[in-house]
Length: 180
Image 1 (spheres, rainbow, N blue to C red):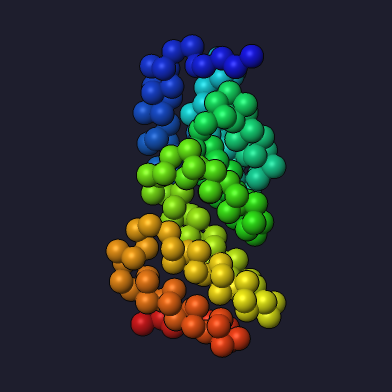
Image 2: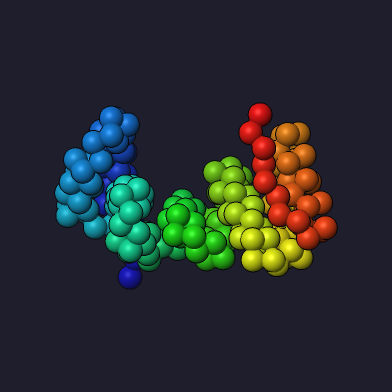
């Protein structure tokens, strides 16, 4: 049985109260407040998401993933939880799993810009990993997928960099961006 948060106003209050705490870098204090909010309402989706994100930022990925699982148990259609889960996995260099969560987030919300950016970055990181391992056809394919995401073509510089990557991978060469 899934239960939605008892009071959506309480979710908003938690968000507004904690935003400045996290912006000031007081992560432990924020975590304490999020745990308290969840003790009052264990179905608070945003508290689970924010706690997961805070824990992931501290390298506590296993615990963070548990909170994203809770969100998806409460609301399987939460694109934010899939995006955050993907981010935590990408930080562990589990790129294939991260890509799957980013894709799920975009399937749930096709306009979710951050999930699209995260998916693009994960695809490019995977392309780099493939190329480093000498798997140039897979590297080129992963970079092509990144290039094909909507919005990428609007950034001319990014489009050019991805095209250079693809060209390098197609000629079985690694690609290294040069700093200006």
